[in-house]
Length: 372
Image (tube, rainbow, N blue to C red; front, side, top):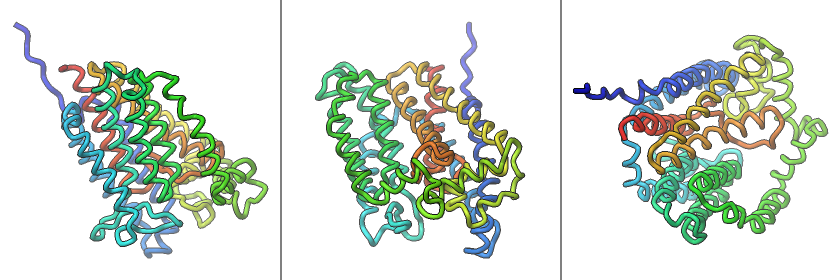
């Protein structure tokens, strides 16, 4: 008689996800301290203000990841609509002046009794869960335009319409790539996926070339050295950080660009500070950790025994991959400036909690394949 299969908690069994996340988060705490110390001292008279908050965010996030890893992923199908409508409600709520916090000309944060968070981050995860459920449910008619494409493109359009008001064009790009990537994985016809192109091209043209600050970003991206003290300021200082870091870096805490030269050194441009202080070796190490996560996510998507698991794992993997590519691409000057964080490393509670929740779900999908 065969022995019963011993169930190991996904949080412990999925080491190829857990270890990279732990290492990236640990690097994040150290680099947030290094990148924010000057700003922290000036704004709060405390060198460790942002580091302490990031450490607390990490603790909360690991608890969230443990919970989502424990929760059977198939049950998310029962809550898909609740999660979807909750995300839409939060995106609507952030538009009300009494509830939002305005920063940098945008209102992307909700303030509820002193607790602040960014609804657009939750919207990414909500969209992934809903699309995974809906695409799997409609699999038999997935190649029918009105069934496989229209409903899912409509949900994306609802999210995009609410987010563009904030405005947050970068998040719309991420959501679009996630949506089309998941539809492709589920089997939606290529022709259907390409059908919005005649509408999208003029819309993107209007959103970029008819909005002054976005056009400035494109022009500064094409040649940041034309105006290094104004529109090209961020990119040129980011490139200076990488250039001065060399192969081995200046050492943690010894970088200069964080000293009120490079804006947002502990959030959007923390990768540049890593390049300056840890050098090419540090940059490649971090990219290797992300690559391990993405390869594991791809493997989980391939091996899942349910279509819901496959499509959802694909969405979660794309979610992390796109954010890494955009953030690092912006810091290296190969993409126009976008306000997206570097997963597990950049300072910020909402993005860290949602990223960890995503990894917990991915862990559960992976572990569940042994018992389905």
